[in-house]
Image 1: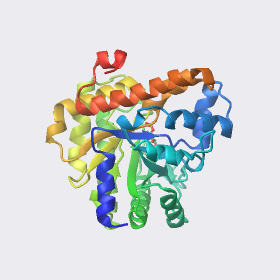
Image 2: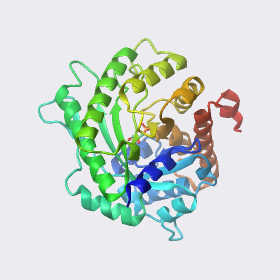
Image 3: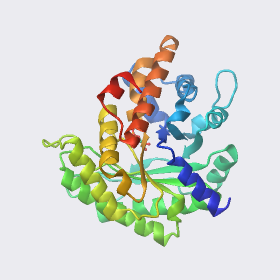
Length: 342
Ligand code: 13P
């Protein structure tokens, strides 16, 4: 694939005020979410749930790309139609999570390193042949006593850059996801300081590994106080701090920044993205959009409960959340849209 096609695909993923749907939970993560709701943790239950998502009418109005997991990209609708065909027919670009998970990092208690580089070139080629046009790799950075360490930040940034270079070689747009976690007592300032350091390190590594910035998407956290921090900033303050941090650390040649939701409520994630659009949209070098999993899927999953009779209501909830986030990109999300839709 030519570089121009890669760059065009990256642009397409963040065009038209649409965003990404992360539906790439690994089997253990998906099972954990099912277990909380009493849904059976079987391959068939995961398949039915993914069928619910990909067959939601009108999803392509708000979603530009869907990130799949290895199990899901190979699955089919009950009638035998491959999920990947349904996604493409809906005007959505299929993507794939390609890291093999964040594992405990040797010599670094409380920290993780994301694995999956071994054999990655061959796996990427296979996914491209199957129809995927972008990929995702998630690194996790925890804030706590004495962490994150330089060693953890550097190792994760290096792996992200090696992954991104391999993706571009094969013709997949890399989604580069260094997630600074919300868990803990830390302040918003601390999150900003750590995120800036992480992003600067990641972009240094991307440069060293010769990644074309025009052909990638950054997937960062918003700048937020830890979940247990007594001071929880307003939506305006979060929007300001997030854009300020990104302006300091993300080169203007990156076409788009697609936030993860990271455990924020669905409504707060939409409200914070909306505020960034209202205040800054016309002045930013990159598109700001969403790549949420929980903040799009969770309400639908809670309605579905594994029951066929709840299917339509769950699909409506999924459609609604995707549409609210598209409104947030336009800076038009508000409580009326939240309650009634557009
Ligand atoms: P959340 O939006 O639930 O944080 O998930 C985003 C994601 O894809 C994590 O890798």
